[in-house]
Length: 340
Length: 223
Image (cartoon, rainbow over all chains, first blue to last red):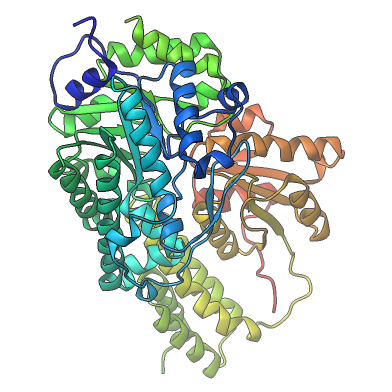
């Protein structure tokens, strides 16, 4: 099994099959792995790359080679969905990923529903799909991960998030309506990616945390729409990873009901606890991004080794990497896993 | 006719029960009955919000509930505020708050603002993605005692240090207390960048702010 390709290794782990060692990956999207070190080296920079298929393919290739991550992961932000759904995007700068400048709607009831299939042909999706098509054909042994923003986070990126959170209580009907609509669109987006050659879909839903929503709303609003999206991805014969942010004590029970092939969590979570509540299953994580940015190689090696000792299935950063993370630090993390 | 005490209890309950309409209705009754508006805020609305803070820390309430409770509180305050009898002797304590440069996540900052206001602070909210210089300018302009910095992103954590460095550079560090908080922030990070305090959540931020200005009960700013 020593000559197993990174793609097969990730595939086997996500299918619950044994492998020689854990894959070490960074899925893109919220967990963007394009750092300024790599951009400086290859001469492709934020924010210009976000709209160019060619630049994304080249930058992702450079990221994979320089960091040692065993995957490609695009896009590099969580604004592709909200942009198409009407929100104003600040594309950021060299150091900073795009972010939402202004949500398009003030209330859930104002959201105008358009055809999800049509929407999946708009904005930057085509460029992302073309970059993926290129990468999946030129480097078929490297898994290509499409990173999608989760339903709750996408909804809170098109409706003012403070109002949206209140309307989860005050206007349940329209809140569900927005989530359902957004999920339909995300499914069509995932379909375009999968048809273009993406081998895994990662869904990060940082607004859908136990800390923000509490267990009841997590159960009512996060779980059903995440599952609808994950089930649809499974229906397209593709694995889905779900990343949940923050502390998870409050939502352990609903967490067990998420259909994902792997659950990825933040650094403060003990992944063995997640394994326990899910009755086994695959977990992914959770090297502190703070350590990766600001600590030295010894600390990073120690943190990574502890995850290996705990038999964590997939090793990855715990959260969004800072673009200023030194590439040497990432190499220590990926090198430690590969040497195991 | 409801007694003053009953109205205070009603306002307390309206806030805890997230009932914006009831809070407004009871606030109007306070005015109609010519009870003290200030006492109604203190004994009813603010005490209700204290209870909400407790429920939040006990994980009975989460962010949607906290936001709805604060809407109820503000609905009451809105009506009562113009009727507060001005007392010049009441102390004013101001806090400048914002999400540091590079981050636009402001839910946490808004919660802290709510808890600070319900604790009687005057809060100058700069918003999100705020440059270090803007914190300093606003704090000087408004005679603030505290600068409160928030971020959700590890990426933006160095921007907190930049604010403190700027204060030191301008020899203004002693003039202001700097409180930091947010998802990735910890006490050790606060120590490392020489912040005055770290608040783990919004309710604690309000308690710490009160300690930092050296009072247990703040007189509410008059209309």
